[in-house]
Amino acid sequence: MKKILVHLLMTAVLYASSGCDKNFEEINTNPSLASDLEPAYLFSNAQRLSAIASYHYQGEIVQQINTPYGGLLAAGNRNIINDQHASEAFNAIYTGPIRYLIEVTNKTEGKEEQHNLYHMARIWKAYCFQLLVDTYGDVPYTEAGLGYTQADYLPRYDPAEAIYDAIMKEYIEATDALDPTRSSIGSADLFYGGTIDRWKRLGNSLLLRLGMRYTKIDEEKARSIVATATDPVRGGVMQSNEDNALIQFNAMYTNGTSNALLGGERANYYIGKPFVDFLKNNNDPRLRYIAVKYELPANPLATAGAANTNPADQQGMPYGYDESSIETAPDYPGKIGSAWEYSQFNRSTVMRIDAPEFLISFSQTQLLLAEAATRGYLPSGNAQQYYETGISAHMEQAPLFGNMPSITAEEKEVYLHSPNIAFTSERALEQINEQYWVSSFRNWSEAWANFRRSGYPRLNPVNFPSQDPSIPGAGGFIRRLVYPLREISVNAVNIQEAINRMGGNSLGTHIFWDQGN
Image 1 (cartoon, helix red, strand yellow):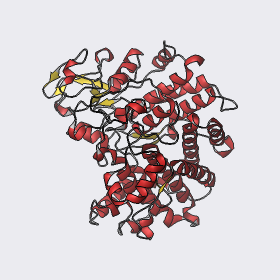
Image 2 (cartoon, one colour):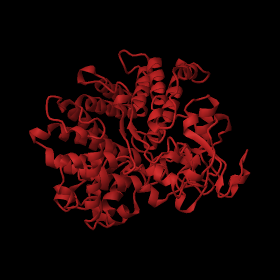
Image 3 (cartoon, helix red, strand yellow):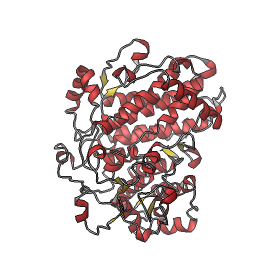
Image 4 (tube, one colour):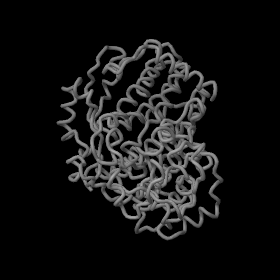
């Protein structure tokens, strides 16, 4: 891993020295120096850069992270448009992983010795495009990256539903094409060290995730995709936490979200009240390594003083208030210096500078199987067993955050059989998706997508006084992020076509799979 990270650092230095500015061409133009690098290391970089920041909108929409501040920090906490944060995923994914994955597929297609790398890149590129669709709706797909070969910097926007069909095809074909008897890229693969069987399970688990997106609009299509994804002949889905797709950061390559929340933003962000309340009210053993109250919360960790992780003392910050009106909130705890006394994320565990970023997990996959079984999509399989395995698997991820003892088997059993958590067929869909919300902690893009799809957990709208006017008509929640202003100004014709097709470019505009209830 250390050797790979050195190569990635070289990539970053070369890219920085290429003189790339923030003009529109950055999205589609491949730096000439990067094109000379080995495809395997371009792939490593694409994997690493897939861990995008998602706390300004996605994490706030699902009410796991909160700030009362406006100005530069205003976004999902107030249901307003902030171009800097709304465009973050668009710019980061197109200029990062998509850029490199297109380069990888161009370099490896048809080359016998790089057969598996080519198909791994197809799977991960499909994942990145799914993330873009889930965030914005219609986006450039068929013409994305033409700036590399044709100097076409004005890509057409494809309908989101058509992109999903193409992504589904990629997941299936690329997963089936992976061959464990052919060469491996070894440690250049940051997920699995090139192990093909695990990549097959990743491809199928992503296909399962995609299939479940259709539950609101086309249950027969959802059922069909789930059947393909779970077919054991094709390799099956994730089998354990060993199959988790994650980026393990270190002292050189630090976690971007942790960087921000440990640095200049450490006095500005707190855990959302609904998240703390759910964990606290259900005596969830995960709360003790997620939440903390520091003696001096505005200080860096080294001087923050005593860390109170007692679950009974944790208090989440409520939504709908600004930095002045928060004093009128029920049970307002007051301030210590420039910081409030609400609970923050533990800087020694889940917000470590080298904290892992989980992109798709065994826990999430088991919970999706639990819902699929509940809906009757699976010919066999026990929904309760999937549900309990999914919860336990997420609890077993705790040691990866460091400085925390494992959650014991006894603690898991007590939790699984506690009121509100013990599986019941009457509340199965709600229970499963509440746990998916917890399991997707820090994976906030996925938590938001599943919240829109399932409607769970049952969160109260923020209802901030100056929220975007499209929000009340969209059920009180942000349904998508708006396109970057730079795109609107430069690629106006193609953007307008997409806006007309989707019925608007607002925070309240629904994407194709988020229709109906």
